[in-house]
Length: 138
Image 1: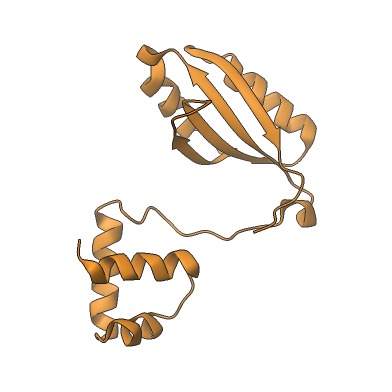
Image 2: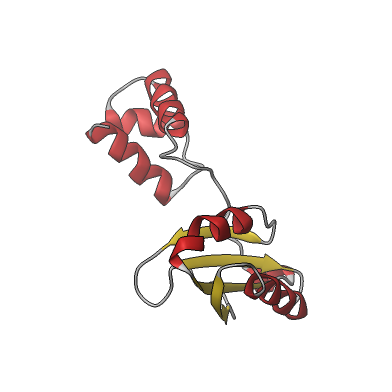
């Protein structure tokens, strides 16, 4: 990965819908070169996907940022089960208060409770610490 790849990533983080022609102009390369760089970054797993930032409240969805603590020897088992859950939109391995952080999005606060309970019952899970998102600010 070189400086141009890093600039492509930076520009996509700012706006994932930026036209490839704008990136090409900023890097002083062709649009084809930009497309190839992006494809390479996707194939390497550096760019894992694209998505919208949604104000869940505006569309009557409930969401949480949820910390999950697990037995160290069961970490990858839990991760694989969480990856299978449609309600889990993002997942991070972290340091600090929790081993895993999740972004969960569902249709209601009651459904959030059900999902959190389902996670808490998974083999290897020691603790589930949800923080319900009241409003998306950025």
